[in-house]
Length: 187
Image (cartoon, rainbow, N blue to C red; front, side, top):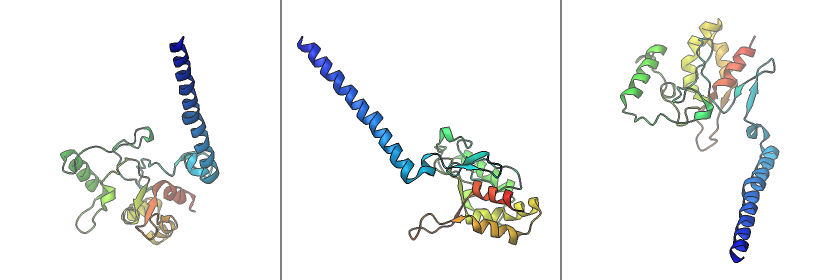
């Protein structure tokens, strides 16, 4: 009889712990996020001009057409379900080969050096941003493909620049999805 009382008490304690830690805590955190940062809590989803969901501001996408700015390389092929780095050393032949392919693809050389973020994947493999330098590097290709001047394109880029680090680190970055959507909306 004493063992049954102990087991019943342990089961009650386990059920109560599950309800508090897994259900109540999760609901409280969800509610706070919905009140304070609803866009982020719901995935930062982005719609195009037609109202269709086209992605998230928080996850990189593969843009391959010349009329679009390209994202950083991704170690996980832009799969949001599998965020991860490549786990390869910077001295890995695989990393060096990938970098050389990218450098060749973009036609970079000593006179036209490619920004580092255009040849290196982020830690998660899903960073949706590129540096302003990477956007400027891609400007001639995008301007030519869209039949617009680089000055006109630069205005669109400037409208999308973010300074996420504030006074601590004010390196300007650009969200590739938002920049490409701004380009598509430009007349």
